Length: 120
Image (cartoon, one colour):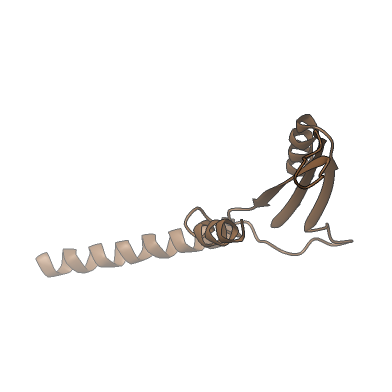
């Protein structure tokens, strides 16, 4: 009797696993290329103030089309002329990266962050 109930339990477990695998496979969203013109993956936005940078990030986030997009927000602010270099403007750039979880999860984003840190 113990052998028979063990066999039934194994068959029941196999049936549940098969049902769950089928359900997950058919309910998971499919990532396919969008039809029509492709959205640009890279965007450049010149900014005059910090508020322009923040609004550029918001706009980039709102216009995001999966699976991946990068925005370079270039802030150019007038400063006093530097006596040593003669520079009259301060240039700063901010990189804003958006990607879907299907493209990169939290663990696999570390190599990208490491590469960006080395580039910096």
